[in-house]
Structures are given as structure tokens and as C-alpha cells.
Image 1: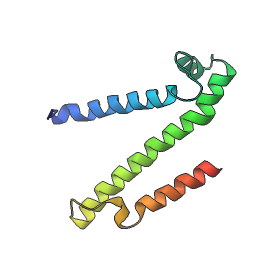
Image 2: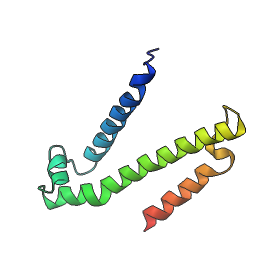
Image 3: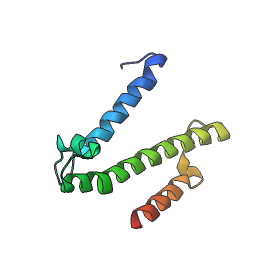
Image 4: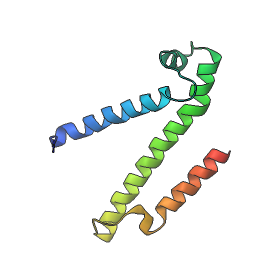
Length: 107
């Protein structure tokens, strides 16, 4: 198993997150490809800009924020209960975040 030094772990994870976000923004029913960067710069066509800025970008950012919140709550639970097997579902954090996501999506 490949094991990165601690100093390289965070930058490697940031690069992977950035790549995942770029991939999530570029894939979908309407293929954006190079139009993705033009739409981000405000020079793309209306379909690409609408698909990106009103549909994909809010969903991807919400997914990143919810993932970060779940990771933080899991680490907090493990520290609070001093149990490495504790997880956010233990006290309902997962259900609460799913409810918040459902509320945001229905607006």
C-alpha cells in the first residue's frame, strides 16, 4: 500500500478534491467539455452557463460541504466518545444532514 508522508497528504487530497469537482462539473446530460471554462469566465453560451451555474455548481458545492460536515462530525464523535468506531449515524447527524440537503434541494 502506498503511504504518503504527512506533509504531502493534505496537498494530495486538495488536488484530488479539485479534480473530482472539475469532473463533476464537466460530466452530465449536457456535455460541457471546453465550454465549462468559458461558462465559468462568463463567455459561454446560455445553455452551458445555465447548466453549470444554476444546476451543477450549487449541487457540487453542496455535496462538498455536506461531505466535509460529515467528516468533521465523524472525527468529533470519535474524539468525544473516545471510540474509533463511532460514526455520525450514532446520534443522528447523518439523518440531520440528509434532511438539510432535502430542504435545500426542494427550494
